[in-house]
Amino acid sequence: MKSQLEQLKQAAIDALKTVTDNESLERLRVEILGRKGKMAELMKQMATLADEERKLVGAAANEVKGAIEAAFAEKAEMAEGAERAERLSREWIDVTEPAIGVRSGIGNLHPVTQVREDLEDLFASMGFIVADGPELESEYFNFTALNIPPTHPARDMQDTFYIEGHPDMVMRTHTSPVQIRSMKKYGVPLRAIVPGRCFRNEATDVRHEHTFHQLEGVVIDKGITLSHMKGVLETVAKHLYGADTQIRLRPKFYPFVEPGVNGEVTCFLCKGVGCRLCKKSGWLEVFGAGMIHPNVLREGGVDPDVYSGFAFGFGLTRLVMLKYGIDDIRHLEGGDLRFLKQF
Ligand code: DAH
Image (cartoon, rainbow, N blue to C red; front, side):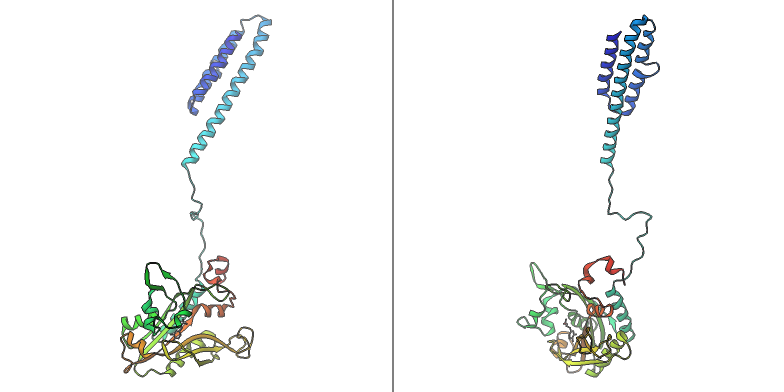
C-alpha cells in the first residue's frame, strides 16, 4: 500500500511537469485529488487494513496527499505568473497619451500672441493689412535688398543661423525683409504691418534670446513725410501706454532708412519722472523707424521719385516684457506652463 502511495505521488509530480495551461491542470487535479480520484481510491482501500497497519499507512497517506497538494499549488502559482507575463507582453501603455475623459482644461494665448493680436486690431483700424513672410529667408531679402551689401558692418551686428549647403539662406534677423516682399506683392500705395518671429545668434541671457518677435510696419504713398510717421507711432504709443504718453524721436542710423530714428515713449511706470525701469531717463526705447531709403524702394520696384514712405520696427517681445514686467526674456520661448498660465 505504501509503495502504491509513493507511486501515486511520483506519477502526480511527473504529470504536473507536462501541464502547460490552467485547464489541464484542473483536469489533473480532479483526476488525482478529486472526490472520486486516485487518492480517494487508495484511502478507501485503507478501510480493509488491520488497525495497526491502518494507522501507519494513514500517516503516510496524509503526508503524500499534503505533498501532492503542495505541488499542485506551486504549479498553479507558476501558471498564473506565466499567464500574467504573457498578458503583459501583449499589453502596453502609452504613458504620454492624453487621458480619455479627463479634460486638460482650456489654455490661454501666449502673452506675445495677445499683444500681437491687440496691435493687429489697432493697425487694421488704421487701414493696414497684416502681411507675412518666411522665417527662413534669402540673404538677399534679409540684407542686400535692405541696403546692407555683403561687406556692410551692419551684418556683423545681426549674426544669425545658417543652413548647411545653402549659403544664400539665413534665419531672418528681423521682419524688415517683408517690407520689400510686400512692395513686390501688393505694389503701392501700401500700408502693411508684419508681426513675426526673428532669430539671432546670441549668447543668451536675461535680455538676449535666439528667438524673438518683432512687428514691422511700412507705409508708402505719394507725399508721405516724417510727420505721418510720427502721427502713427504716437497713436500706437498712446494705445499701448495711455493717452498721456508722448514719443521722442532721435537720429539713429539704420541702413534701410534715411533719415533713421530711434523711438522712445514716456516711461509708463514713472510717467517720465525717472525710475529703475527707464534707468532714470523718463523714456523707454521701443522702436526703430525712418523714411524708407530710395535704394530699398527701388529694390521693391517702387519709383522713389514718385513715392515716399516710412517704416518702423517694434521689438514685440520687448513690448510684452515691459507690459508685464517680465525680467528674463528666456521665459517667453521657454515653454514653461507655470510661466505661461499667468497671462
Ligand atoms: N530691423 C531693425 C532691427 O531689427 C528695426 C527697424 C529699424 C525696422 C528701423 C525698421 C526701421 O523698419 O525703419 O533692429
